[in-house]
Structures are given as structure tokens and as C-alpha cells.
Length: 249
Image 1 (cartoon, rainbow, N blue to C red):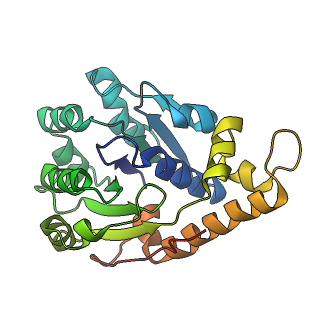
Image 2 (image 1 turned 90 degrees about the horizontal axis):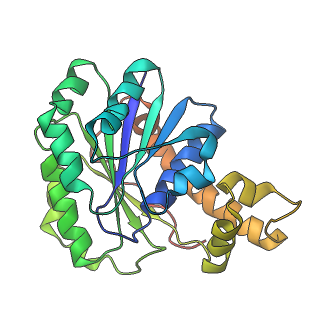
């Protein structure tokens, strides 16, 4: 069954593309059909790290934005959308002007909205906007990613009305562990997929212990995503289930 995943957070630098890359790697490892639509016009991480699976996306152009829904209609596949920073207005316009929520409900295409955050006040406020944007469709699922690689204090979020409202909408809260900065920098510099970073031993690659850090980081991610595997891969899941990922590599 086709499925759409919006990976956003609106705020720049919170790790949206990292989460998108992690999800892409999970789909690849499980031999699941998917296409990634890269909306970042300046960096294009998906087009760089997962080029064989990715296409450019311009939310300012209706014809390009339509590829989100058309990709889910034309083939039985996951549609993974890496949303750029400050894209909420363009996305909201496309969704509302074209009745996208009504269409996906009619066509029984599940939508999962991933909100990646760094714990800042701005990130919390933007979460509230994201939930409100999709509030009229009760079938939209939310996953909130507390990215410990970009923030270490999530007290504002944990005590916020936005968190309460999101949980009332059945949001799932994920703590993404931090990966060593030097290791992530090498992965980015060499343009490696997360599989290649953990497994390649020839050419431009990481050291043995660096590869092991990537393996352990991904292992935490994989183990802790298991309780919401149904949500990610298209099966039913109880709402408001909270999972915690280790905050250390």
C-alpha cells in the first residue's frame, strides 16, 4: 500500500534531512519500494546521498508539488518527502488549495507527518502550527523527533501545551540519539549513505571504531522504531504510543 511521509520541522538546522536519510535507509534495508522527493533547493541531501532513489521537489510549483500525490497513486510505494526549512506556507497552500487531505482520505493513502525539533522555543511553536495545519484529518499520523544531535534540553517541549495537544492527536514521540560530530562530518564529506558509512572498508571510508559508532547509532534507531513499525511501514498502530531512543551513541 502506498504511503506518504512528510519529514519537516520548518526550522533550519534541526536535522530534517538526517531523519529522512535514516528512513530511506530503513526502506532500502527492508527492500521496500519508495521514492524520495527532495525539497531542499540549496543543499539537496537526499539527491546527494541517495541519488538513485531521489527526485527534486519545488513546493512553489504546483506541477512539481503534485508529484507527491502522483507518486503515491502511480505506484505501490512509500513517498518520502524531505521538506526544506520555511516551507510550511507553500505546503499549506498546496494542501488546502487542492484538497489534498480529502483526496488522500478518499484514496486511502496514509499520511505520516514527522516533526523534527531541537528543543528550542521556536521548534515548539512550529510544532503547534504543524499539528494545526493537519488537524481536520484525524487519520494523519504524527511523529515528533527530539533530535539530541541538535539539542540537549527539551524541557520547554516536555512542559508545553504543544506537546499535550500533539499527544491528544495521537502523536508518537521519538528521541533520536546523537552521533559523534566527527563521524557525521566524515559521512557528509565523503557523501556516504548510512549503510556505506557502517560497512565500507575500501576507499574513502571510516575507521573501524567510527564504523562501529554508526552501527550502534543505527541499531538504537532500528530497535526503538520497532514498536511503531506498523506506522512506518503501513500497518495499523495504537495511537499515542511513546517510544524512547537512547540519547547516546
